[in-house]
Amino acid sequence: MKKIEKRGGTLGVETRAGDEKRTLVGYAAVFNSDADIGGWWIERIAPGAFAEAISGDVRALVDHDAGRVIGRTKSGTLRLSEDSRGLAVEVDVPDTTDGNDLWTLVERGDISGMSFGFAVKHDEWDETGETPIRTIHKVELYEVSAVAWPAYDDTELGKRSLQEWRDARSGNEENTDPAAAPVSRAAHRARLKMDLELKVRSTR
Image 1 (cartoon, one colour):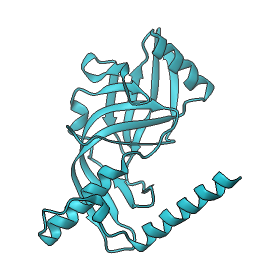
Image 2 (tube, helix red, strand yellow):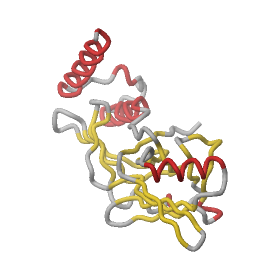
Image 3 (cartoon, helix red, strand yellow):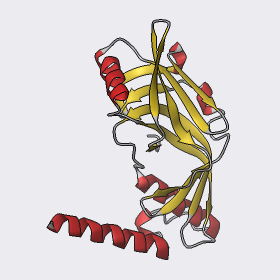
């Protein structure tokens, strides 16, 4: 099974109507924009990361739900491109329950984010600072989604990738358990702070 990660952000998605066609437009990813992934590492996407992937058969979904397809590159109802900012998305919204509901929710501002599901084909890690920095250079893109909660999910896969990189660098290929990875001081402080905030909230 593929290691599929999901990333997103409040990058904005908007509606454009004309010529009897309804189109959602936005960005699923922005280049060279640092994102804090759960306090474990900083992640950035390098220009060109999607260059090969956008020519594949990619779906547009609602909230990463494979059963709620609203567009597809193969049919021409989803169009993807890279520009100087990032991964630009255009989806011709269908006249379906999901399509009509999504159109209304975006118009109202209830849904304002986009996300994407991918597998990393080439990345680099930099641990010269307190917090590891992951630069993603090449991905295999599976889907883009309009989402109500654009979040940075599946950190376990990223931690596993970091540990694999550490193992390869040290020549130890056997230990790939992400729980065994040494945690940077900054990441550890961030985790403790997050745990403390959750405890405080739970007592209110």
